[in-house]
Length: 273
Length: 356
Image 1 (cartoon, rainbow over the protein chains, first blue to last red):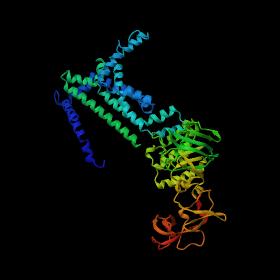
Image 2: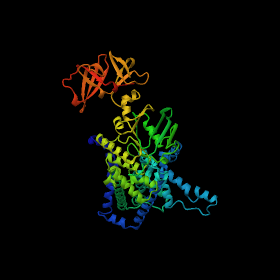
Image 3: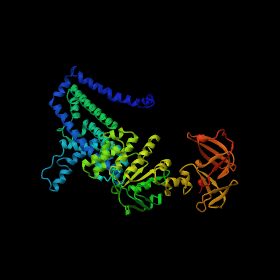
Image 4: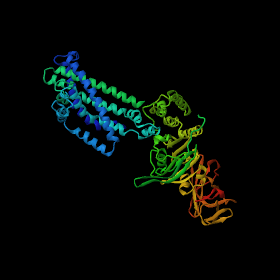
């Protein structure tokens, strides 16, 4: 920080790149939202009074909230095994979680389709074991979307959690043990609260990523669980409603912005206390 | 604070610890008395912290046996020993307030909530944290965090309090203050304190006895005065402060004292262990003379240089035979006209020297 100009030189190219590929196009989207088909805020009024748009927004929030809770909870267990487990557990985590991380989102969505569909593996096993007579509807609904998205997003939760768990002062846990605290108490009253910044960070990353999901809900939702990204796509590419699609995009961005700001404030306050 | 002090006696017999092929500790045996303030002192890597971790139960000894009030506790895990512990860096719970930190061990012990409130209030008062009960550790100064760590370790009245370099993060003035505080807490609680430090003056100031470690072995265990004035070996002598060491020849006896020759001077000294032929004297017991003094030991030397240290001045001397001698004199007693090159005598009372 002693040489701000030098620092700027280092991150300057990145800022330029982001400006050219992200900020300028987004400003174009903002412009569409207030100029197409005619100047004014008519498209925002239309978006916010359209029951379909509202239903999609609510569904998106609901799915993203469920995915965030599921991903962070599952990610916490996985990270615990990764950071604090034995060498065998660490290797298992790396193989099972981190390698599929690099497999295409499309491949994974179809994989879940194969597992969860009415004639898929899970229903097949359950029926052949005689546990079910009718197949369970596990896919082409919100449940399928949540499963597929959670699976995709767990690794994104793992990294912030791992950094929080690795930076934890081991002596604090020893201190709790020395005072006679049992494993469950140390975990719930000391370890989990101390990793709170990691939990918040993981939750934010997962939630923001989840808001923009497109491929997974399109495949596993089967057209019945349209989320906001798919709605924007439909408005812009399959109907002449560019202005409405742009207005929904801006509303989504504003929502993400408010969320990020609120979380950053939380984290700063937590650090200051 | 309490009617009957809760203080335990610890015994260690033949304690050893290996980390792989490295022996961190070998054959340490000692008794820590009830209500004692014992300091484990040594340079880093000497094994003092390893020994404290073994006493606490966080490390298991590779060899040897530990007892608590005569009962074997070698295999008792840390959480069942019931000791208080203050860690280096304090290890406070960052997400809890001062009061919640201190109440934590009482909640673990499932004390009644009225009792918890009363005890927390008492100990917050005892360690002087009155107004800070609702703050979090990050909002406190180093000295205040130190007090929270002490309060949290003492609130459940442990029979033993273990402290791992608790002052290492504090500045010098605060250290002095916390040392006074520590002495007061030891007196008021009556608990057995075992304290690790690498700071000699801290150890000398606080302890009832000092255990000096070097290379994983216990070198000496004695009172501060004894380790300073009658160190068991050259390591202990040099670790506790500057010391002059003169190699004597023709060692024999002279009445009740031992005697030998150094650069033609007949020097007398309290008798020491067989084989010890070095005469050792602390710099502050040496006096500067312009002519050979009539009594006591003396060595002829030339003044090499002076170092002004404030209340004291250190004089570096070189004997005729080339041996270096160091004297420290109160600056107030310094004779006028001391110049490098001046011929002087360094003298000291015979009983102030010892054989090493």
